[in-house]
Length: 262
Ligand code: F6R
Image 1 (cartoon, helix red, strand yellow):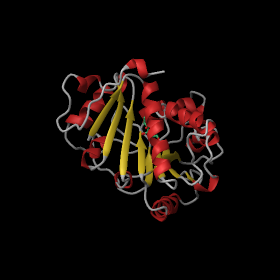
Image 2 (cartoon, helix red, strand yellow):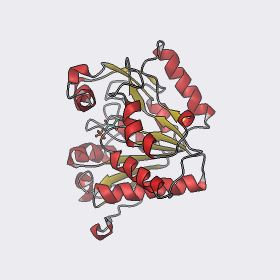
Image 3 (spheres, rainbow, N blue to C red):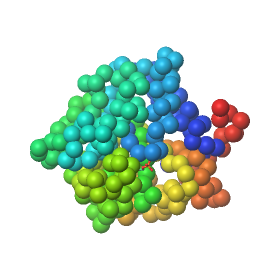
């Protein structure tokens, strides 16, 4: 597990966006797995800014989002599809037909999950899976549980998760759907390269457990330890609990100088 620590969120987003642009230059038909949430917003806006300057080309790329609420259509303002449109897809030149988000309005959710798995396989699998992480260690909507599900599946959302998504539904946690569709842990771990972003001090505790703790279904992100090409990209606040004692086996712990963060 490679751990890279940046001085702040801004330099993190700029560096990661530049890496994605380079990956797209090397492989224009790159397949990207994408999260929603607060964490990737800067990255998405940075990719949009780079696209406006002709520095990144998504014309042959394909994307697969991790998850979507169940019971709302893609056009619903609270949907993750709408979030992605606002923060990324409207800012770059990705063709609509190469954007893949689970359909929360599917009449047969099980068939929709199977369709998604087939679509990922048909695209050749995910080259770079970008992830965020919940403070309880969830990734996608794979919440801590006694058992985790491998494939894309239907999931009941925890109250805490509905609360943290309330902003998308006018601040009303009760308006957040009770269920969602999510890539499963195996789907995520099949990504050829995984880059997990965590920023802010609220993530410091779970990052420490992801890096130094045991692999447990109680902390879904701990399964990333099993992957051969995973990088945790952190700001200093999220790295606070591991900075004092750099993790055993970490390939790099890099502190970027703040003077580069313009
Ligand atoms: C959403 C997703 C979630 C978020 C996580 C962190 O697509 O994958 O696992 O990454 O809930 O959310 P933020 O970034 O808002 O802290």
